[in-house]
Image 1 (tube, rainbow, N blue to C red):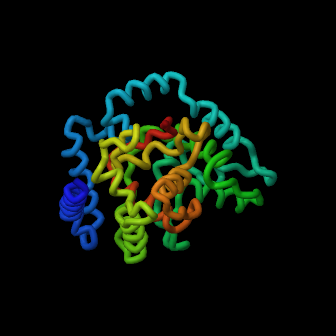
Image 2 (cartoon, rainbow, N blue to C red):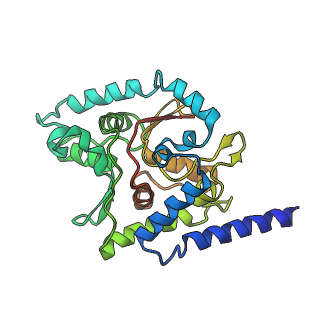
Image 3 (tube, rainbow, N blue to C red):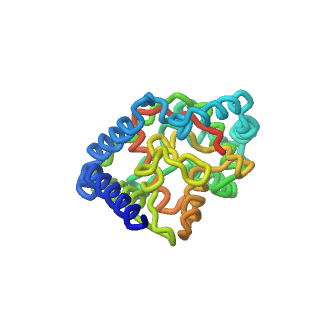
Length: 281
């Protein structure tokens, strides 16, 4: 029995390896096409646009529960608190709007993106704290609290905007993309698992009492209010939790590893729409 299970797992991994890869050699455009085609075929009854809703796009019973929660969303208070943070001037009289500029509704859709001057991937949360420090304020903590509330407000104002991360072209952009891609598919931890094991190869299957969500659309609905947390949390807080679940050492929020992973995952979700903040179990 054990041998059969291992054989099945090996064949599944081999098939997925064939699908994605030229995982090592494919271009970002080829990766994106293969990635999205995989989920379209695996969950053929799910409209492409609905993948922004995570597991609720593929699991009818969970969707009904989620839709009832959305009547009185648990993130509503965080959005209001985030609005207050956004509108409160810094000690020097300037505001977040002075940093971000443009239309408030357009901000969420800018992220993540590669910044050539800093040679890094910038996330919404990274730019929030950069703005604070540039105006003489202390940075927020990265995973929850004020940064998740402000991020929730910005995400709420930007709902419906398309995910359209610029495809990496330069050598340095591609290096960040490849770093995120490698992280997504690499095995780690005592359980020897990759992000792709749960959210690509076994997406839609059960683990304990939960259905594994498809990776397509993972980044569209953050930050989220998780019932397990009893609070809002950023995407990098969730990344840390996933690493801990497979008994791997987690990286710090906004580490190069997690920024690259967010960059890769969001590129894979190009064509969907941002719909954060979200509510999850």
